[in-house]
Image 1 (cartoon, rainbow, N blue to C red):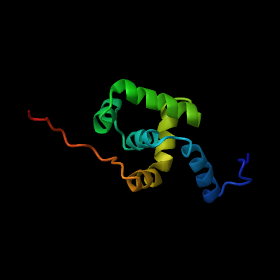
Image 2 (image 1 turned 30 degrees about the horizontal axis):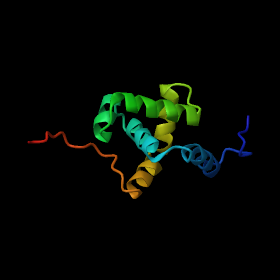
Image 3 (image 1 turned 90 degrees about the vertical axis):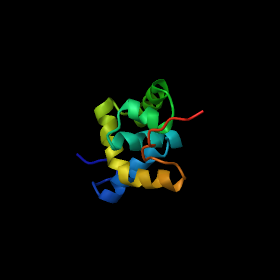
Image 4 (image 1 turned 60 degrees about the vertical axis):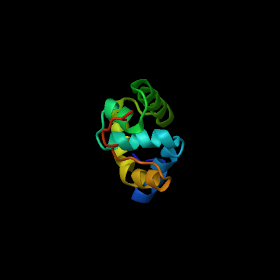
Amino acid sequence: MQDSCGGRTPDCLIDRLWEVVRVLSGREREVLAHIARGATYREIARRMDVSLHTVDTYIRRIRAKTGSRNRMHLLLLALSVEGSLVSAIEDLGLSVTPKPPGRSRV
């Protein structure tokens, strides 16, 4: 069985993968990068300074836009693009590294 690329060349598959990822917003890409690095929803929420509900919303949107059937499928997508995705996110000036735990002093 052949894919729509007419073959299974790595360049063609990478291009098709990026077509899928391009539809994601910057924050959705950031969530995808965290998923690829093994972060839990709670860790993603803390690192992005958003609520768990917001993380869940991002993940539902990512799944809808990419056609991911379940969390495992989403993880495989995230791992497929992780290296390039992290570079692209950092090029935009966004951080995908964990924020150190801290408490504001008043």
